[in-house]
Image (cartoon, rainbow, N blue to C red):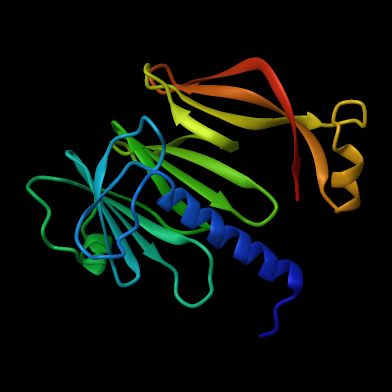
Length: 213
């Protein structure tokens, strides 16, 4: 079916974001074998391996599999399994049927990182980027928010990122007119921290100008 320029632009943007998140401080599997991966600075470190349409992330306590959707569909299905011994069998179909938790694609989701018993997933639909946090032990989602980078864990295990606070006014942003002419919406973002220990979101007084599509 034909796709318009806006759809293709969003698709290319999402693919570039996905490559950036995987290849920034981590290593993509270009030469074969397991590679180190953590996804977000301060998150748990995994051994990473890509095979076909699946990516595998082996942690000390869990194994995460990310299965890409067929064709040009955006997003992935994510499966989590308790690790009981060193992981040697990389089989996405078996994991999809024999896992402790799964997140099936709905809003162009991708695996991002793991911290302790928490699974961090992000999605991008072209107009916004969302962050999801799941408790692996219960399979329940405990947090959802839009987000912007940089995103990282601090030494306390708290996750910091930027989130939209309100629409910006011309006097708020130096690039207000420039962004508006490009069809972008200027916004004010505030820095936020999600405390995984107490399951609470803390807003900082620190703000910045940004834009959204």
